[in-house]
Length: 255
Image (cartoon, rainbow, N blue to C red; front, side, top):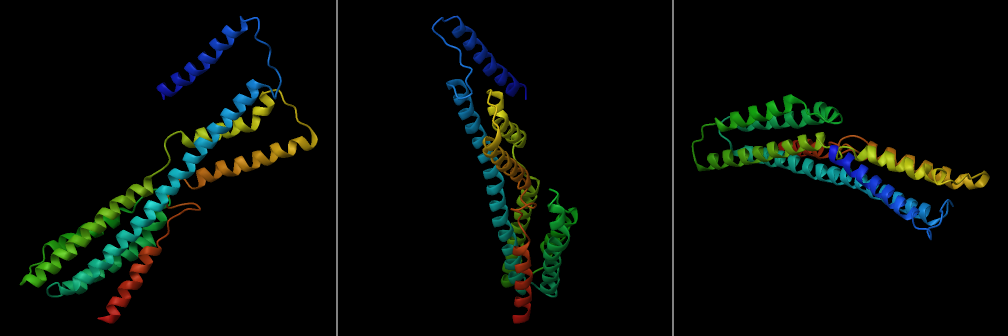
C-alpha cells in the first residue's frame, strides 16, 4: 500500500513540476477551455484507465468461474469412476463404498453448496472423504483383481480430494485487493470529470452524462456481483454432482 501511495504522489509531483516549468515559458498559453487539450488528454486517460480496470474486474471472476465449473465436473466424474471401480472390492465393501459416495455427493449438493456461496466449505465434507479413503485403504484383498479394484478406487478418491481442494480455493477466491475500489474510483472520476474540467451542461446536454452514469453504475455493480465463483450471476451450480447422483442410480439399476 505504501508503494502505491508513493507512486501516486510521484505522478502528481511530476505533473505539478511540469506545470511550474511551463508557466515560466512565456510562449505557453492558458488552457481553461473544457474542450481544450489538457481536458481532452486527461479525459481520454481516465476513460482508458477505467476500461482497463473494468476489464480486469470482469475477466478475473469470469475465468475463475469457468475453471471452477470445469473442476466440479472433474470431481463428480471421479466420484462416478470410483463408484464403478468399487464393484470388484472384496466382501461387502462395494455396497459400503458406493453408499458412502452417494452420501458424500448428496451432502455436497444439499448442505455444502449453500455454504460455498459465502466463500466457505463445510468441514464435514473433508471428514467424510478422509474416512472413506481410510476404510478403503484398510481393506484386505485376496487376489489381484481385488487389489486392482482397491487401487482403482483409491486413485479416484485421491482425484476427488484433489478436486475438492481446488473447489475450496475457488470458493474463497476473489479479485485482487483494491481492484473493486479502483473500479469505483475511476468510474466516479469519469462521471464527474466534465464538471471538474469546467463544463456546465444544461438541458438535453445532461442526458448523455446521465446515461453514461447509469451504465457505469451498472457495470461497477456487476463487477462486485460476480466477484465470487459460487454466488451471483456467474455462480457455478451443483449440476455436475446432481448428474453424478443420477449416474449412481443408473449404475445401480443396471447391475
